[in-house]
Length: 336
Image 1: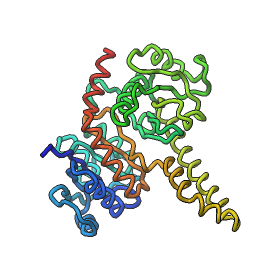
Image 2: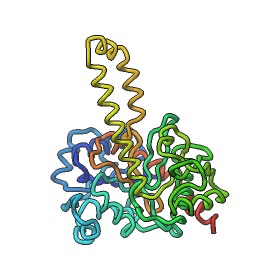
Image 3: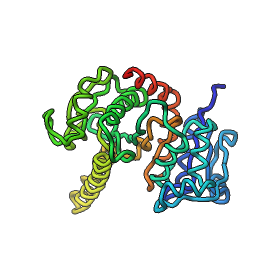
């Protein structure tokens, strides 16, 4: 039997823990026989949830952790003081090689700080970026960075572009992914100081397919596969994406239920419409990996339901199978 890919899941993180977290993790185990799952959290809360499901008990283990890091706690202080928390224990297991990946819907700040302090960066990586997949009319694009490095330098963005290219090619399967930098116009001379400094560096980078600037309105059209920016801009883009998607779905539902005629039409198109809208659901793409660490750390939404947890665990399997960290190291060395 092939060696199992070991994934650690924070069972206590997020608004819907532990019920939705446990369900999603077990769904992943039942869907993929390559996974060894560690659920980290309060045994008294996790085990009753586990009892609701049928699964291979030899591939699921509960690791007790009594403390929980609240999203409102100062991240650095929480990581230092709450050593028996599900986040700290999961990150330590990743650092120590007990597991290959850690998935959490818990405190974003604690996961980002803990990822860098506990797991540590791959040699040569200046700043690990948070990089979610976002839906486009052509499939998906990688938004890098969306939350880890608000004050980034040009050299950081170049590394983001390189790591993003590796991720899209090997995890998503996009050959020679197109890389673009977020800007307020398509012209090379536009942008703030950071964009103006970064643009020529990306343009002269031989091992990525740089296609120039991309305006925010063109991101959903699929004009680039890797969308590069610092975390402030990236987070605004991501939150706008989520807000517009929710608003559109709400407006569509309201319109379809406004009269007898539209209700009949809704019944006729319900199946096709549901399929179309599902393609623009962020939860179907798993969480956002914190790229460039010695082990994989995936941050999911605080409101994650089982489907996002399941897809994040499966995402970790592909990451490990494709030896992404080793490919990052090779890509970054090529620039030396």
